[in-house]
Length: 338
Image 1 (tube, rainbow, N blue to C red):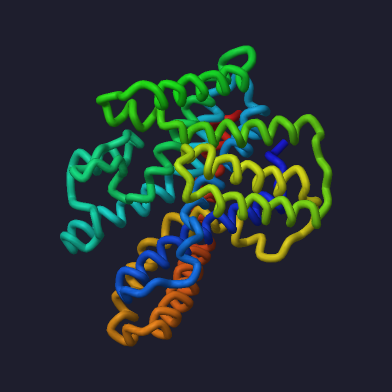
Image 2 (tube, rainbow, N blue to C red):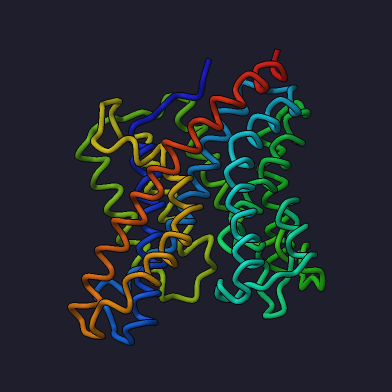
């Protein structure tokens, strides 16, 4: 039995990936055109927080079928995220070798490269903890969450243990100033967002389904409105972004009917879009900037064109690279789970 394919969840994956893309795109446009752009006040990159809550939801459903089989669970999850991530990490390393300084805020550091392939948190000279492919910091959290979940699957009440472990680590992160960048990273309270996804999944498993497309849309919009309203506040991120993300995911799962929604392919392509969009933005920027005037119209043309190109690259990456990779690796996954 596979994890249910929920149309609302697919739509939220697409929404989260698009939010991150738009956030990075607007930052690029404002940097190059030196103009304030409409929509800048929206916390677009908080799409990452929606991804984390979705991950907590999906992993709960997936792990529920594999209690007592932690190695199988961990292998399946790593097979899902590692191949494409390694591909784009290698591409970034190649770019840094061919064009030193070609990527903003990233240099060629052997220790950072090694940590990138092992999902080990690495502190850059500027103090930021991130791998070579900078947006891969989210993957470091994802793999850490997978490891915690696999560890707890060997226990009698895995989700209770996993919840307690997440709460313990995040509490330490709130109150203990660690000197180690790794401990600082692993105890960041942002991991509570995975727990919020677990809660939504447990409600779903217990039959808390109230499908109504109108209610689902209202819930998602309310969550987005709350995300915007709380962003300027000094609240911790797991509250200011995590709770609205939980409302959004709950609305897209508990309230969304099982019906076909337009653009489902973008949910499938969300991971490929997330990993590829920085490359697409950079390449498109280098090509387009010399052709556009430094005006609001130029910024608008840049934003729309580059967004379309990045989405196309993400979709093609999914269709031509990610899908074939998953098909090629499927037999190996079946052997492990046999």
